[in-house]
Length: 451
Image 1 (cartoon, helix red, strand yellow):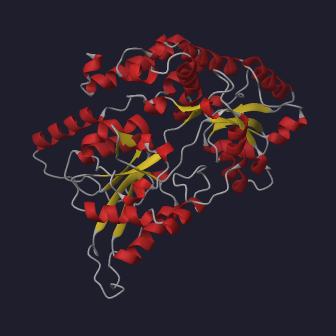
Image 2 (cartoon, rainbow, N blue to C red):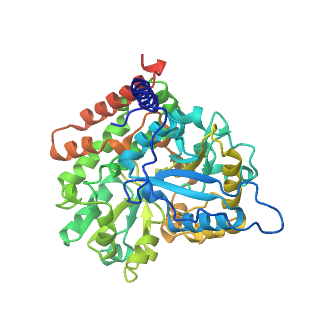
Image 3 (tube, rainbow, N blue to C red):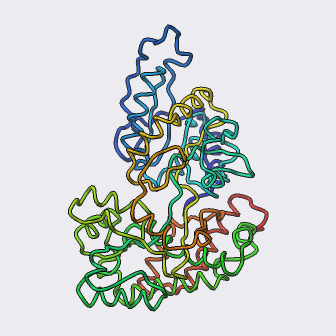
């Protein structure tokens, strides 16, 4: 389990004091597992327009998970360099190392100028390091729907250039039409759909069991359903340790139903060896009929498998709780700034640059994996899959769940789901383990509500 930021920082500082180390060396490697520069020139171009660029020659370090930086990010970084003389240096790590590296860097003189964080409650442990961006011009243009996930106590701490999306079931409409299937109206209806597919030698659902980060997205439907139908204050109660995961019946139902899908063979025979990357091939070639994913996944699949018909695929709500409940995200990944950095003004200039209308338009045109832009001014055709959700379900059934829960580290809980699949954990024990792991993180963070 990932350590909390306070415990990570405390450990690093103690080690530095013991060893007498003042700073840390630059781990400059270009491999996917280590920091990676953009390759942007280090010499500033000649000033244009007759005026010297005030920050020419500066280098802004950007710490991020490797696959969170796309080609369009590098293109804009080069364009920014050509205009300002400021180099953007991307330093990239795999997700299982990223947060420990970030904690170490924030505890030393090597703090990055910009670092990426998940939206929602993931921001809260880092509040003391974050630059307040509430007064920036672009903040007024960012959609209201993504501001809560980028804010703490009403102050904006993240630039959201991703989108508010969802975790729902994408289905191959051609396969569904072939067997006379439609959007499920109940849990039993969903089971019948899966049985029909399996009986016809089609894998009902692709589930990447080897990549443990994916499992927890299934159970979020239970939390969202409980919030909508039973207790609208459940997120606050979870954050104040007034209720536990194991005490929420809707979550227990979701986990039990997840296990049922596995036991009935609806995830296929190779769940524990299947990876997320393999999902595109399984869906794109028609080997699997459904996958739990986000709104623009089909567009990416279409680019990889042009003959798949993925551009016409649709979605329905995760059925593990109620087939009318759509669990949405808090807004994806945020760009955050280190408030005590020496390059704060240059960082603000960079944020101003990437949020110019023409650069926002270019960014979203370069990101076919993003569904709903975070800025209303952007013109983007919405994926058929995403619009099928919008057109099918009442807007009141779309809401954020676990992204707003403190110490929710579902991406690290994969081993619990693997044990559930193998039968060494019961659904109730899995939820109890979630509570234990949240408690450990809260105590390491010195949260009084868990004492």
